[in-house]
Image (cartoon, rainbow, N blue to C red):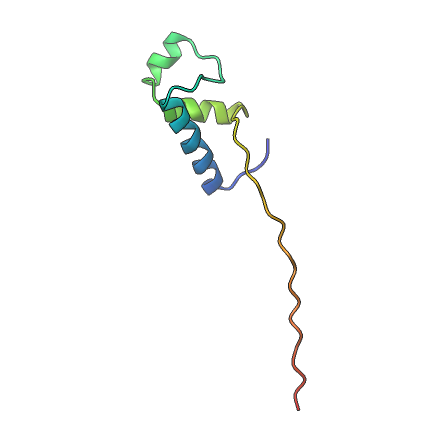
Length: 75
């Protein structure tokens, strides 16, 4: 599993929780007892999916371009 920043993790879990609350199927197997224990909370379900590395969401990274600054010659 890739190491995410706390901001990326929050965004991933929040986005997946929104999908779950809108009726998306769970990607992790949870019994009725487990669902009752977490109170059918979509954020907790999304956390379990994140921990199991099952989120169907990816992060697109852009390559950074190196910028060289030339020192001005003193006259």
